[in-house]
Image 1 (tube, helix red, strand yellow):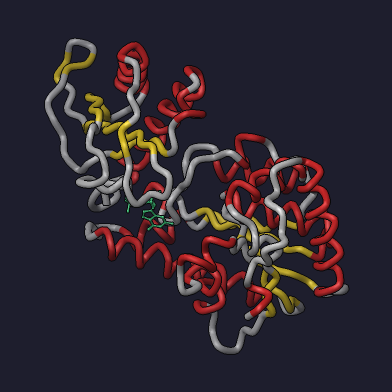
Image 2: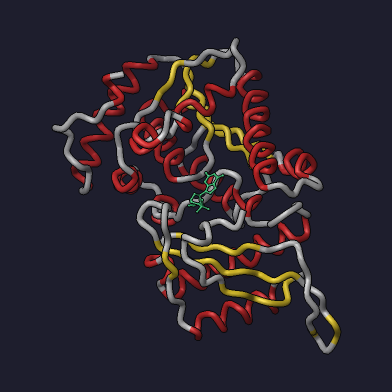
Length: 326
Ligand code: XMP
């Protein structure tokens, strides 16, 4: 399709002026495409879907219906941030679905990483379908497809939702940022007024904390992971590492060791810190973290997080380790 090819003449969007020009052009384009019809968008809170949401809210306001599915595997505060920014801040038409129980009961006892991914991806489509079916007068589906999705894949992301929807649900696609590279999406997001912590965020896998709560997920270990991850992010923000490190997170394996807390034996899980730098996620190097920061993180996690009694640091580059543990 020719409109899926970025023209050579298209300037790289690096400034606010260029971003504003792009936004004006897309606002007009979207209005022309959808008229007075309604558009549905799965809003995960990631950079791409957030920028599409903000752009479409500017173009068509309440004709956009955002659906945020909380699969229970989000990082701490993420779903709340989506509601705060889009519903409270931008007055978006937002449907929030807390599907935590559905996802966690399907994942109960499942330890194989690929099975976990399939369950999470599959259930997402089911929940989204159910919501889409309740809305009778929607003709368009918006997606945060970006140019690397078109270049690198055979359209996995571009066709993910559509491919998953039943045959009888036919939507025309609205993909306003499909010719943009990630850095341009971030500039456009800022120009649209989205907060830096949303547009500059590190990559987060679709299955979320599901592939970092290693093995069969349990609610208590997932909660411990979420709290430990929040502490890591807070301390990386405090010391400036969040600006230098491409991806950083905690993984919590399904194993316990003996420890001691409040003069009593305290068995707990280890929290594993992973902090890597990479250009394309194909290979990755290890970012050095000052010992002072490591001690602070260790102290906070082991005293503040229920169920964790040790903190470990993963020093393995990719290869041989992949970025995620599962
Ligand atoms: P690996 O672990 O393969 O990860 O070195 C490379 C990059 O891909 C992300 N990743 C995923 N993203 N769904 C996603 O959307 C997934 O199932 C998934 N698995 C890994 C990972 O976070 C890293 O940025």
